[in-house]
Amino acid sequence: MRTRTTLAAIVIALSSRSALLAQSVARPITSAAQELISVVVEGKGPDVILIPGLASSREVWSGLADKLKQTHRLHLVQIAGFAGTPAVADPGNRVAAPSAEAIAAYIRRERIKAPVIIGHSLGGEIALMLGARHPGEIGRLLIVDALPFYSLLFSPTATVAAVTPRAVAFRDAMMAAPTDRANAMQSAAIDRLVKTEVARPAVIAAGVRSDRKTVADATYELMTTDLRSELKRITAPVEVIYAYDKLYGVPPASIDTTFQNAYASTPQVRFKRIDDSFHFVMLDQPDTFERAVIKFVEQRPPVARRLNE
Image (cartoon, rainbow, N blue to C red; front, side, top):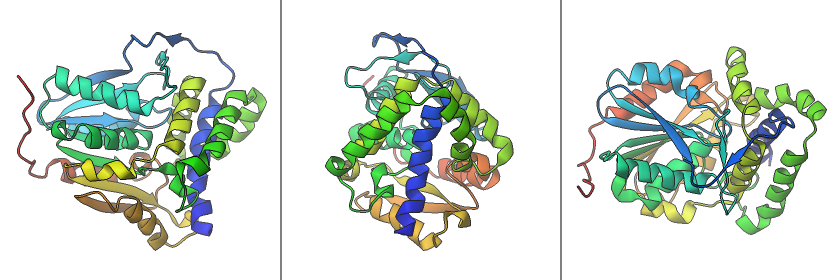
């Protein structure tokens, strides 16, 4: 029980952080015809697509990108509505699923052959969607502190039906959060996600600039999307990097079990735990994280799956 309670705090922090940081500032929502994602390309070499998480900026990858772009061509994704970018209205009030389709369309449009996909948190869920729903277009997947069904953090027996009322309550609370309460809870929420104090202001700034409705919809989608039945369709090798810290209050084996069970149906999956880190592994343990990523992307790639010319 203590394991589930401790891990659930991560999801609660994700939700409360974004809702509470968004304050009460209204931000424009553009038409659905506008791009769901924007992409900055840096470097030359084999292709790597990096997807940030909930209410995050692509700048979260800046430390890794500085090193990786020396040998790879990076496609740094920014999801619309996060970190000051204009929000895009989706008829289904979703964020992850349409973003995954937008990235798949980008891969086809740019004729990118078997890219490595790296996704953190919500970006990890998007990466899994790409791997499962577009297996012929993906080279390898690196998932950073993300689960195929986030509500497993509340209970290992969670179901979409059981968790939906909680997800609705979270979404409604996020939309209604007053500014004074937001200011009071902001620091505590960030403390649960970023252990390194000097790294927190950038995460806070991205959340402050994010569109409230986009974050609320994304949180609801994250909590009520169970991708476990789709994992068997992933043909690409998968590596899952996840965080552990003694402040979680549970043995590391408990965290190991949670991740390994969640990905049990994935055909080719490996796991790497990075200790002394909270959710933003790339900020709390940048050197260890960068070494793990570089080792992963420099592995000999599978035979390229060519797109239709």
